[in-house]
Image (cartoon, rainbow, N blue to C red; front, side, top):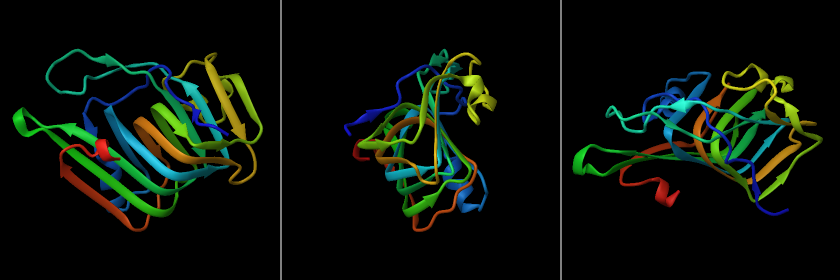
Length: 208
């Protein structure tokens, strides 16, 4: 199967801060749930992702500008993708944040090798989600968002809006070569090993 694109849709609710490194801090502090969010896209990559089910819907909202300088808010186009009981292998997150004045850019790379269980639900708000190959079980395309088992209860949706739902046996959803340009990543749980958090002067996105 060829390259699969699930993203590039309408906007999604985002926080006002440029980059909140909630994921890294939450892991270090042993919190059950974690979130990494940004008004500028960050990279989410994995060798593969498996799940029991997948949901997709379109979201729309106005978000803050990426710089806290009083500029007007902006609109972001995004799709909300949910993995149910997901596991990803070799997680890599890359994010950039502009520094004031002539300092340039601060980059962050977070990696976790091996299998990373994601908990019951993982919500990815993304400008683009790509997979080198994708395998889905029984899938309903064009269902109302109000009928989606998980996303019907997530704020920012529209009851009669476009939705996609795929469900099957454990691990029946498979996305190989996952590569997403994301605005927010919300996890109901996370357990990692061999984790590395590496800030750097200069862009981390460029080499991600």
